[in-house]
Length: 373
Image (cartoon, rainbow, N blue to C red; front, side, top):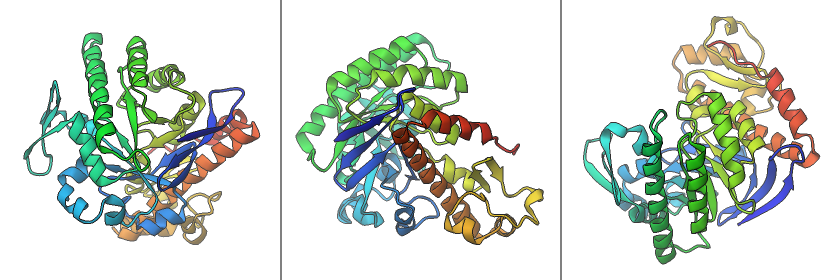
């Protein structure tokens, strides 16, 4: 399902194509996140207009609301959400991790209470596959045990063992109930910030033979140095002939770190989340349009961007809409940020083919200085 097309000679960066049921995905790729189906503030045609080839939706949230009965009745998530391109669904493991006060890890799965109404639920390795079968996602993730920073080696080792056990059961159930032509399955490497456990998890996950591999448990509060160190150690452990996915990472700086290490796929709510607070990406760094200094600014959000919002509206106007509480402002900033990320990935991909990735990366990061927010 993956064609590796070009490798950078100076780093582990690479460009390729992931072949999926709803079309090819060129990598490196950033996947916009549609937690409940849509990417927040967007209609599907706008995501297609930006030419996103794949988006991510959240199995945990969709399982709880509207529920699988509704989505199955409506013909699956593609039909329900009006999206005819690729969808990756996560397993819900990270959401349950982030709501740790509401869950309990058991031998055969995770018992948790809904953050919506407090109702009790249980997800096993097998029924997470069943949930994603009903959703109809092009790529489904296995259930994993994500761990927080600052735990002991022993605690992290137990989580790695749990992740491996669930992964094997997930793959076995997948083989019984899923059409592999329509839906692919990725395993997840855990191990916290312990390199020996990262290596152990990678070996055990690879042995199960998934269609692709994800790196989980990073960008959960660790320092940038630790993030880069563990990522650069883990990524080369993964097979070269299958896609590599870094979960939950979506700042330009971290994207470059990931691509340099050999990552192909990324996702994060960050671009749209900060957009709804008035913060936007530019080639000179991230800026906050709510700041007073933009009140009389005639220039677009990013003078180097050719998205519809930057071609038609000034910082001053969008700032005015933000301050007035206009919903259109959130649509403008969100559109720009997702467009920006799409263009960034295209430029990175081009630089890999051109043999100029290191120069492009260094020049970008030299100019990219975030405004003090």
